[in-house]
Every structure is written in C-alpha cells, then in structure tokens.
Image (tube, rainbow, N blue to C red):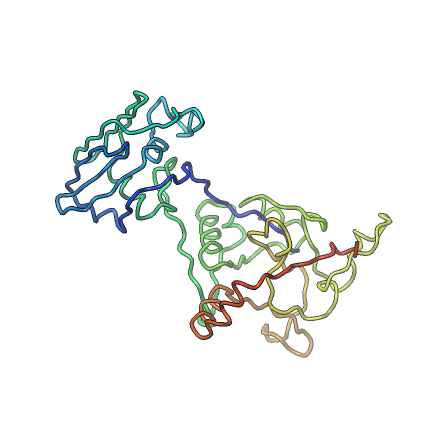
Length: 313
C-alpha cells in the first residue's frame, strides 16, 4: 500500500515586517544595550557602537500583553488592520533583560530583550507562540548511509517513537518501520496516527500490484485505471506525484506481500524486488560543485509534470 500524508508543520505567529540594519548574531550586541527612538523606529546601541533599528510594527506584532494576545494560546486578539495607521514608537528603554517600548497610540509593550535579539539571527526558528522550538536540521546523505533509521510499528503509536519517526523523516527524509502487521489498512492507521491522509483519485491507498486493481474494475463501470506500478516493469528513481498541488510531503510504503530470496537478500533469480532510495538534495549539491552549468540549467529551465489520472481522460 502507498498513501500520501501532509507534513506536520508549525505556522509561525508573526510575519516579518522588517528590521532595519540586521546583525548576524544576537550576541553581537553584547550585554549592555541602550534604546532610543529615531524617526519612529526603535534604535538599539551597544557600548561597542553596534547599532540596529527596528520597525515599530515588527515589534508591535510580537507584543504578548493581555490586550494583544489570548493568555492561554498567545494568539492575537486583533487584526493588524486595527492598529492605528502610521503607528510609530514614541519612547524606548532597556534594562538588563527587557526592552520597553511606548507607541503613539498609547500602548506600551515589554519584550524579553534576548528574544528580540535572537529572532534577528534565527527568524525561522524563533516563534512567538511557543516557549521553545528546535527545528530538525536537514542532513543530506549518500551511499555511506548503510542503514536508515528504524522504529517499530508499536513505537510509532507512542510519543517517543512517534517523535523518532517524524524526526527521521524531517532530517534524513526516510524511516524504516519494522514489525508492521501484513494486512490491508495498517499503513492508513499508522499515517493517521502521525498526520493527515490526503486522498487522491486513487483513494486513500494506492495498491502497487502487477495486475489491475479489482476494487476499481469490478461493478463500478469505470474505465480500467492504468499505471506503471500495475506492470512488472522496474520503476527508476523518481519523485512521486510532483504534478499535484500541493506536492505530497511524505509517502508511506507498506510491503504486504512480496517474493523473497532463499538467503533473505535480493535480488535473486526467483525475486528481483528491491527498493532503492537516493537523496536528491545531496545529488543537487554535488552537481552544483562539479558542474555549475548543469546545476544552473536544473534550477532555471521550467519543467512540466503531467499525469492523466490513470484513466486517460
């Protein structure tokens, strides 16, 4: 069985309005920071002379006061269109740990200084609604990855196992689940436990067989659905379903019934079923290093992805 699931994702609470004069690291400002207002922007300066300016809307969007966000969820109580047009900062002060800003509409906000500085060096990894967020770090790989990360079927239904399963998907791009029952519906159950299924015209599950899917053909009156996966032909390396909007985040493959070799290793004369995986990002990195011209073509020439839905119509 093969099915498509949506990737678990975090939707940040804030859109970036802009920092005027960004610094590469929060620590660059040092322990001593003074604040002032210039032309409505908040100006931070260190004893070493490092200066940054912050747009007032960027700060206001990060205000966590009771009048700005719900205390339990930290979700905003007001749309940004409700903020006074032309909002500016009127005053700003700092202590060892806080930045306090007054705005021209009379509102005052207090911000943890470390959080504000940290967001400059890691905007994508510094959410407003969550206390802590450590995104997985993507790891590219080649043939040196002899054994992909493994987790048992039972473990995926437990918090620690589910975390390992998802972390492997988000960092390496694949995970092997062992010990799954060899019966239909198991793959769907696992997928529903970790994310949301995305049905297609093939249904929630696509059965990879060398014969047409009887459930589609019998008693429905529909034209036979066709796909290369229904034939004994080998299928080369590919990205599945790139013609969809949105492209699938993850796909799960469940081997319910297949041939085996006497020694347990394949392929062999009686069984040529072998699954291979390749890291496309690693290949792209090597291509950029070894053949920049080819990489330029790969990333700039438009490519059209097509699929006729399996029925040719």
